[in-house]
Length: 120
Image (tube, rainbow, N blue to C red; front, side, top):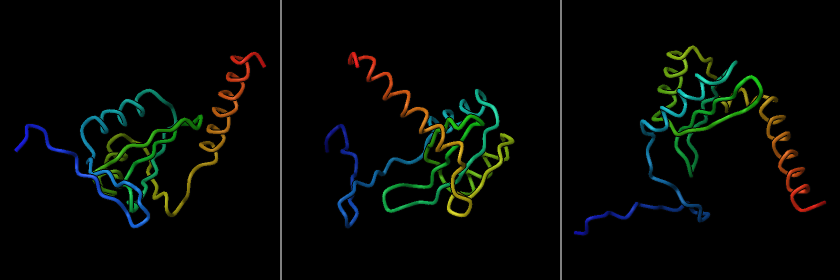
């Protein structure tokens, strides 16, 4: 037996790679840091899919967001309650408009910077 085990990788019927990495303390710490450093944070619990585990999407008042794996949906709701962050089931309520607007602003800024960097 070797010193290092290969990370198990499985594929869906469509060929997508499914990661077997579980949520860990690094994920929790990242979510806590996001909450502590931003205003008006809400949580959106995303159900598991064929290629991912349950995730918690945090969205700040300005639309900035982050997503991390979590052990379960109930863990995500408990985490939100503990940190006084309202949590919703994303499959039921969808995603906030401010998140989409933030993504558009970031993409437009990136495009503008790329044009400026290329002399255009």
